[in-house]
Length: 279
Ligand code: ZN
Ligand code: FE
Image (cartoon, rainbow, N blue to C red):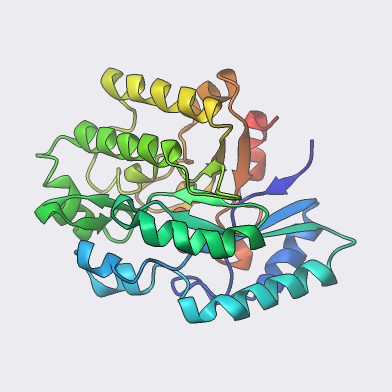
C-alpha cells in the first residue's frame, strides 16, 4: 500500500502556524510518505459574509485569500518539481460546501478545479441561530451560541443536521475534478468534551450514516481518516471515530490518512494509530 497523506495545509493558511510547506514535505519524505496532497482551504465566496454570523476571525481567517491563489500555485508547483524524485505531490484544495453559495463555488471550481489533482470536500459551517451559518470548529462559545442552543440542547439533533449536510454535499455535482474525498466527517464533535456531548451517534443518526455511506460508495468517494481531532483539547478522537472508520472499511469505502497538518509538528501524526483502517 502506498503511504499517503491526503490532507495538509501550508504557510498560506491564515489560521495555520506559518510553517513553510517545504519543511512539511521534507518531514513527510523522512517519514516515508510516497504521496502528499497539499489541500489548502479554498477561498470562501465573498457573498458568504451575508450568510454568516459569528466572530470575524471565523470567516476572515478561515481560508486562502483570492489574491493569494497565484502565489499558492507557484509555491506548490515549485515543491512538486523540486521533490519529484522523492515524493508525489498533489496540489489541490479543501473545499467548503456552502449550499447558499453554489453558483460562486461552481464558477471558482470551473477555473481552478482543472489545476488540481487531489481535493477534500469539507463542511466547516452549518446553519444555526438566526438562520445564519456558524463555524462548527472555531470556538466552544460560538459553537454553543450558534449551533448547540439552536439544537435545543439536543446534541444528537445537531449531529443529525451535520450528517444531513454531508449527504447534500456528497450528492451535489461541483464539476470537473471535484473533490471525491469527504473531510473530517465527525468535525461536529470537536467540542464534545467541553460540553459533555454524547461521543457516539444514536440509532437515528446511524441510519443517516448508512445512507451517507451508500451515497459515498455510489459517488466513488473516499473518506478522510483525519487524525487532527485526536489532538484537539475538547475532541480527543479521530475523525471519523474508530467504530465509524471500521464500518466504512467494512462497507467498502476507501479511507485515506489525513494529518490535516497546519505545522511541521503535525505531519505524520498518529499514522500508526489508524494504519489498521487503511487498505
Ligand atoms: Zn485549517
Ligand atoms: Fe477542515
